[in-house]
Length: 340
Image (tube, rainbow, N blue to C red; front, side, top):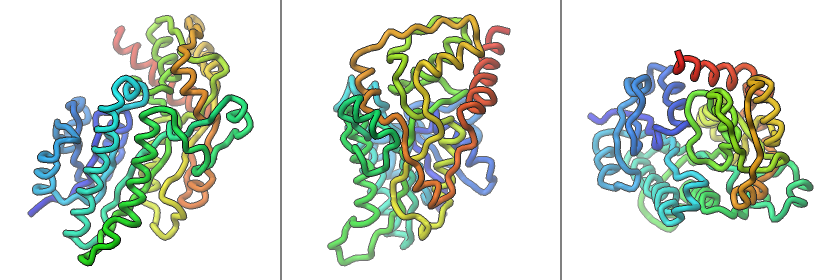
């Protein structure tokens, strides 16, 4: 008899580590995870982990033959900066990988005659402000505004959202056989900051990179201007958003795609907070024109009022507690332990 599981792709990434820990706190959850890389020793016992490629349809078929998948958290993605260097590969991973998983979910739903929940993390990268004047004028952007991304990653994510919406509402709409039910739910994240995993190639990673460099006693050259501003949230809040949305009654949701956020900071304001914690930190601003242009195209803040209204979204960490209680002490301890 096949085992019922929660399936997590991209499990070795920043969100994956935190999500596995939180899901494992409920002893009733059986977790199955997939990534190109193995998991750290402290996480490996919490899940049945498969090392493999999300594009390997034979591997996906084998997993379906062995497990009954109740919920999918599709975290696997090629992130924004890396996607610009290899846009074709980004399309394969971020679009074709998502399509393959949606088809897997559809097959599971049809075979079992019940909905399969599909959680999809999207990104602030799906937005595309045309210029700084517009960015300053439209400060808090709603879900349906400025969906004109200028990066491959943003294009991939907005198309992933559209694919999920199609599979949820219209897939096989002309077919005569048993209908498919995919319960697609999406959160659009701002820049994410983790105290426990290293930045991994996101365009917003100048924030956490500043803190890690200061904690290690290394100088840091920030690749955006001092006044560059986007919204951020901590990794624990990102995981809470996914889990809270997953637990929300379907009838309470007025949309499939929701903004979530916590606080908005300029790069200079992040620098000031880092120096307050690490007075010897050396942080200089040496903007990279191409990466700066991407940050300039992202909103200064996100309107997450729909998530707050529909499913009670509220971040645990504001800007003060994010730095003073979560980021600074944990990152400081990380490098203190390594130097001991």
